[in-house]
Length: 618
Image 1: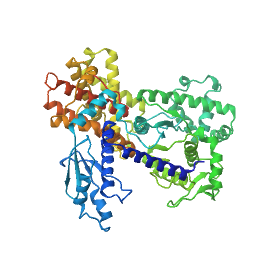
Image 2 (image 1 turned 45 degrees about the horizontal axis):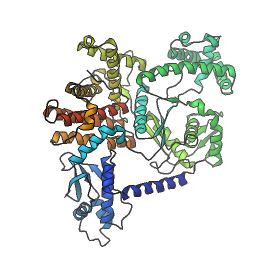
Image 3 (image 1 turned 45 degrees about the vertical axis):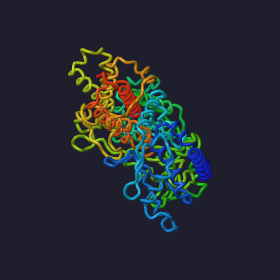
Image 4 (image 1 turned 180 degrees about the vertical axis):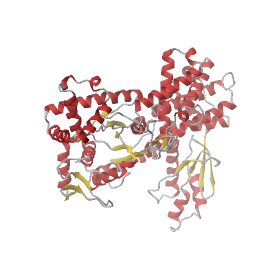
């Protein structure tokens, strides 16, 4: 078993040593080794200043933030007021927050990054970055690649548990959010140098398999010959078996006995169960392939053999009590206990989820475990997280590693503000049907623009798929995940406003500008220089340089919409720049082409992190 408290102490000590080593570098070295995160680099500078300003005060967290519109400067250090509240009763030489802010400014080490600083209001230190340094940083990225701007998170391995459909049921629009959001979080973590175990916790175990297996035996006595084609629509197969289970008492009794035989390891029943799972997996794989989502399945059945030993461990720690024939864990702050063994001796979601958590901590050595489900399941996760803390598996603080997070998301709604369903209002929308329609609508729009006459059929099909699927993904990801959102094809496929179509077209236009220049852009990266002499050029360059801190913020808060907003703002800043400044044929052509290329590179990385395929012509 993991010794959580010892591991936390060791990690804190390692973090302190790393921080000390980083702060001990010369600022010249630090500036030369810039790897993308402006905010962190400025925090290091201000930490040096803080130690000189108030050497007796330790443990003060530096507060640096991007300046809000209308405030002079690019970044702002906001420590003066909070620092004054700490030192004002200690015989300090300072006479208020403005004086503290001025001292922080005066003690700031010289750095190539910083052009100038000023103090405003109650001690806010406004920082203007050096345009020359910004330009050089962009040049370095163009040579060394966008991966040099990847943030570094304080974890090495994470589990992202997402999608998780139920066997024998088709994936529908309800699985869309978990699959898309989970894939994006996994991609952002992977880009941030975290090893991500992408887990598909499918529902492949439980009482429903009794009725499915018995119905399979009735319909196909020779189960060895059963194929996906023979069964046909697995969703329909499930509904028929459920109807018979509800209407036929004899069948219901057989199904209940089948569950016992399955869970007891009967080879005939295990074989039938495996056949049903295999057919479901084939259907799931088709959807994942279309969405370009990678997952490794470890379903409920995988953890089943580990449940007894986990229950025994919890019992040995005195956590489990008897209640009305069931075995439960009472938790402070909850009105009802967490049931881990049912009164009939069977296991449930809580026993499986606790076991999966135990396995991920102890066998897979994960430091951060992230679960994606709808917000309605939040109480369940809060309960079993609390039980894990009570067992000593997790630290008391929910921000200390090893860490668990439930990433809840709202519902997908129709235009009627009700749960998105088919026109018949009887069924949820099948995910494959939704993707088909997105691609069809996208292709229709391209044909209306005459692209079928300009492109090959393959180019038309690939672009329609990239734009259609990208539109579906972005329409989901741009919203704060915790809220409901309305699914509307017309809005998501619009080429105006904050949509994937607009952003993909913007990227294609940038690529067109570079192509029309006739310049070898790779050669230009080696010989050309970036200049940020005009306000629009500088604003674009600054936004490019904020990419790393944006990805880090999106990772830390598990909010993909933060990255979506960054991408849209980047496109808007480029549009402003391009509408004012000529690129091709101008005296500044080389510099501006490099700015175009840097923008396209960052846009493509954003698309990749969002699981969207970029298009290069439109």
